[in-house]
Length: 269
Length: 326
Ligand SMILES: Nc1ncnc2c1ncn2[C@@H]1O[C@H](COP(=O)(O)OP(=O)(O)O)[C@@H](O)[C@H]1O
Ligand SMILES: [Mg+2]
Image (cartoon, rainbow over all chains, first blue to last red; front, top):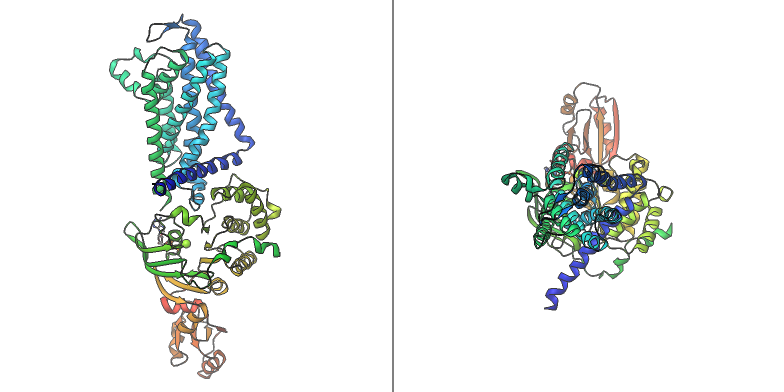
């Protein structure tokens, strides 16, 4: 029994360590130019919140939540901006940067000659993306609490939910990136991302769409993330939040599996 | 200088002296890419402490073989054991004990020279302080200490190559795989690399290298296989291969004419063998000077003459009818 279980446990430790070495590499590669890029990822959702949340909010008396409560428009929009920021932060790292390292720098070609395996590269890159994404989420939550758009207690709960959102988008983005042939393909992805950003119940409740369209919107990952984060930050969603969590966990697992399978095929030629 | 000797291969003392078990053993090893067979059933054995070479022209299947040995390319057929393990099942465990210098440098462009070594060491789980110490020693070993804080991209080709070789040593590997370690380097840079590899060999590290330079193979390899079209066409020590497949000396004749062919016919009966190249005729003989006297006695007046010892190039030419580097 011990001999059966022990190697597995040891391997888990090994996987963790080898993924961490990938993260370490990214920390070492962190140079000054990068910081500007990092800051832009935080500023963007705050600008949206200020311009739309408060700007448009001034024209609207309030907005009704599914449970009937009416809240200020900014309160409604802020959790969606949090979700979008978690999505953008994770995607930036696992799509554009990941693709560049994979196809142009040939970084992973060097790494596979070590004991680090493709799955561990994927996990390491995703974890690194989440270091970045989590920093955005924490900063944005701080802004929300300061502006009175949520409470401190809710923000503490919202943080892991935002991190989970990042993991789901990060791993899905990485999986998609393994299918990309050139930078042009990323234009498509950017369009898809922007469409999600506009229509995932971010600025208007999904309830206003016709039934067929609404169904389509509700299965998208950003909708589920917005739904979850709005639940946590504002309340009123009930047990549906649990479904969102399961959905995002499943997406994370699926993305990682597809990404590492594809990497095995592409790297171990 | 002597400090460098401690850098690599501390493990070798633990190796039983009596054991001649091969570190690498391939039987009927095959690599296919779609319908194309790049490696066509080769048998290879590499023993502890030897420097083993794959000599062959471009496209012979050398890199494909090296990648399979490096456990980053699954064999399409045959049997392969490395350090007694199966490369497909035990890839990470084998790779932990290998050092790899691939044909094309894939250094990390976002890191400095030194960070390239320390970061790579971390992939092997080498503790941070050890990684730093080893990086410093290895930079000294490949004479790059002055460039420690430089990025990779401004380095010359020779420097990048040396850094890649240093990187292959951060985990104190038992076997170092070098795919064309000096291709594209100028003569001076090549000699520096050879000198470092020779030193590794002296430390008891097993070297496996590929090359299409016969002088490189002769300089570095205890034993080699000549590859062509995915197959092994000859095997042995450089000396033995030359003795077996060529004569002691070669008389090179260049005739001042459009075609060397016309003159080749007039050399019948001289030497063991005649090879006609586009620009010269090679006469395989035991005594080059004596043969030259005979050529002149026949009234032939070559424009240029060279008497030299046989090399692996001649072995390759004899075995395949083609020159090694075109
Ligand atoms: N990934 C690949 N896909 C298809 N063909 C390949 C691939 N790698 C190598 N080949 C082909 O296999 C043959 C042997 O290549 P290689 O092993 O690189 O030879 P060498 O290293 O001796 O020059 C070449 O004809 C090459 O084009
Ligand atoms: Mg090659």
